[in-house]
Image 1 (cartoon, helix red, strand yellow):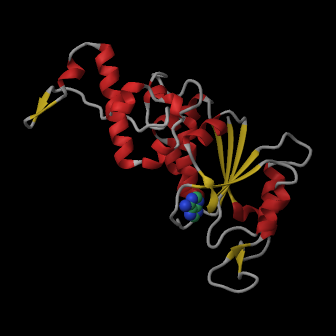
Image 2 (image 1 turned 30 degrees about the vertical axis):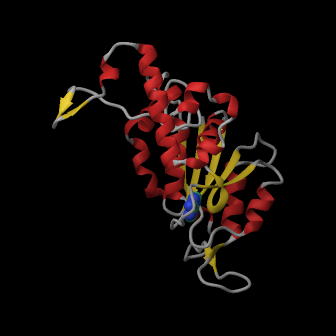
Image 3 (image 1 turned 120 degrees about the vertical axis):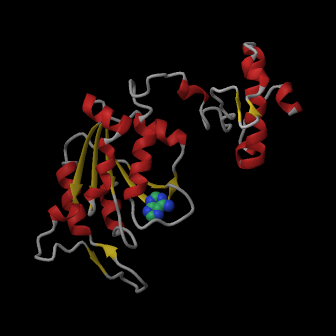
Length: 242
Ligand code: ADE
């Protein structure tokens, strides 16, 4: 997968050299390039923002540098990337959207700062490439950089070959519309707390049932919205008893 990121703070992306994302980059699974938006400014102050039309606090990112950046990274006439713009006004980011993005060959992230990017940039881009404004959640960050780190991590771990144990993609929270059951490792007893006996029983049927029950109990307590969204046919009679 090819990923371009445009930001006025390219230094934010230094952690993408670390850990499994760093390894995905080193192996060529993830080809990532971070670009400084100010490279597409032409004045001595390298200006990227201005006051909002209509008034109000804060600054808005001017369209000209963004237009040039998008023309350079998604040349008209070429195969267009999918443009992603993190903003609290976007569609909610989710595991389903992460899967969708993991199947794309080229993602282009535009990191806004201040009160966001002049809307004409996104409207113009949408005339020649798919554009998704995406939100991490109902809170406001300083800008899109941290959101891009989150989205890229969620997407990269879904790319083929990035996770050693593919089975772990199957059970994790959100994979089946439920939160994941609690997990334990050795030692079997620690500070007077024991690992649940069923997990040490070797009975895989019982273990699967126990994990399913724990996942249901947790999801009911923490995420009733996820329970409400479950398809009725995804529940069996033993689930209903929980
Ligand atoms: N930029 C500022 N706040 C954001 C949020 N909640 N999600 C994505 N991008 C953002």
